[in-house]
Length: 205
Image (cartoon, rainbow, N blue to C red):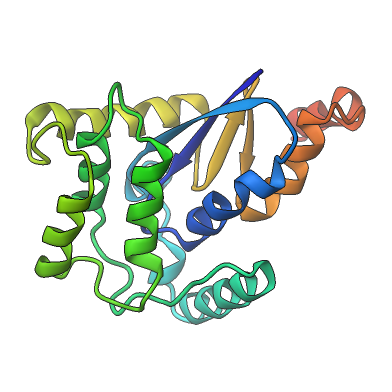
């Protein structure tokens, strides 16, 4: 059975789409997934980059492409009322529901759909209160241990070479983006391409 780590931030619509379509993409395979929340802004800061929603032109294109991809994939998606937003409350809530830096699929599904379905403000206080009541919260979202876990998750992902979300790690290989799901499936199916072609990129200077 393959062990996959799914690095995510609820602010990312691409992470939402990949999360929703992962079971169908890997249907029939034997695998387990660890869902690992991290701070996407931390990855961007480390690499000296801005998020796509912070760049004029790219922002509008990103939203249009995301809506099209959701339409094509038959995934319900409505843009939230405010985006980008500070996802710390949602990330900490996910970690407060889990153990050892992971969150289960139900928790991640609930949080992703809170953001990406309905077109609401993800941080509206009443909605956040209702969200917390739905989830199996085990620790305070403002506990120092929860905050530290999010920092640790982000730093550990950077150390693994993660630069964006969604990223899925398996066998020390990183598959980045919603559009990488077919490539991930091919790898797990044992496609011989990976034995001869994967490492070519390492030698490019």
